[in-house]
Length: 267
Image (cartoon, rainbow, N blue to C red):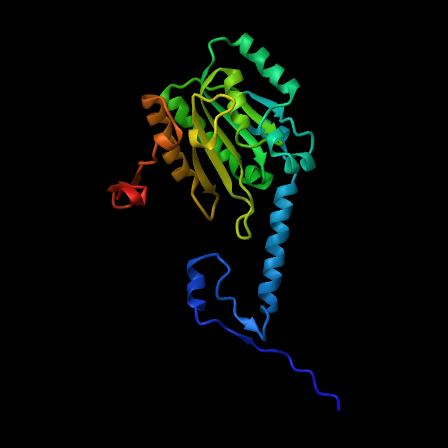
């Protein structure tokens, strides 16, 4: 005899109140032995947004037009997105043509620069599209206040973190900051990362860099990221080093007017 079909009722998780405290996918409930339909659809949407962020083309020329100062459009040795994703090593160096272009620029500017700013698409051009310009504006203001000589902003298509070392070395820059899109998460497809290096040169590892990550409206604010970067740059300039030897001990201002050490390990 045919049995009538019954729909499973969604049962809420006892930890449901914790969802107000985090964007993580916890306490989603269940419908029978499966996720509720809404939770499953939300996951599929987030996954699609992350994939789109990875494959979104970097509108470098459009960004260059919005920059107040001079800029250089460059390309890594990865000729296209598929190559970039399959060959991380090619994203860490410039194409031969772009390398020669920077060498010519250095020949015309033998005195070099104090600071080079690099923007690359990384793994999320969406993050660069949304957050790179306001961060660049803040960093340039900090550099002007410190009296540092800025190189033309370099926009690198299909670039990874280490490409900034080659850019800065060829420009003769004493320090370099690269902004690029971080690997998208299922709740953060537009997270911008910032990497700072003192005395950059080809062949450095991540141990020589300082990272400030999760720069976005729902994460670390532009103001706080700029505050931390300024501390790192000032200390690097004074101590002539960066990376694991340079800790983020920036004082974070409170609404009360007091300050505290940002690194909880140092409290």
